[in-house]
Image (cartoon, rainbow, N blue to C red; front, side, top):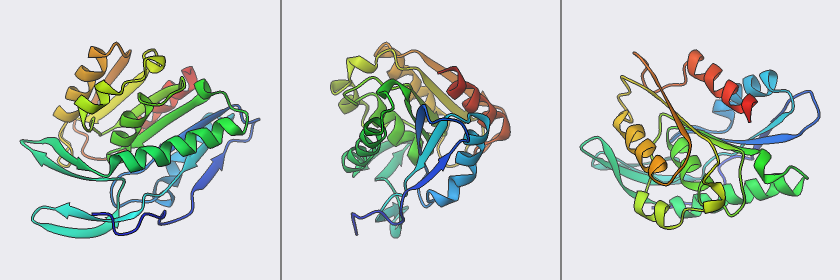
Length: 224
């Protein structure tokens, strides 16, 4: 279902005003762009001035939308069954894109344990999928309104070096796009593998990034 593999838009970088000692790869959701969530990157860099935030944009793909297919930016294609994500196509390729971004940050002199993956919705799924299969110790992972794709494959390829990499999972209780049960399932699988995971649920929040949630994410980043 991949219509073109090149990035739809150039990767955006938002840097804090202090010396760069940590990096965040911030991944957007389906149909969005790095530019579309740049305001999140700016807020993080403002509150955590030693951070450099890298915001890539997913390639254009033909994506399943009910019985139809639409062309949009997406890290992979997926389908749901009984509210839970089941079939996933194209995520391995996107994981390699994320791996490349992490390695580029490490190449600038930032230690791997000072690099975090943060994502929303499909970007959250890709962050969670990629972080715990990466070959070097990362600083943390944040999954907002997401899910864990291909959990059996994820467990089989789990990188023990990231067993102690902290995970923050956030989800709204009335999410009508990605049901909160997906985050509950991801939390269970992560803890099964020994990951120290925190689960924050936000009463009455739909499929969005709320102010309280963003504050919690920035607090998590600061503690790393």
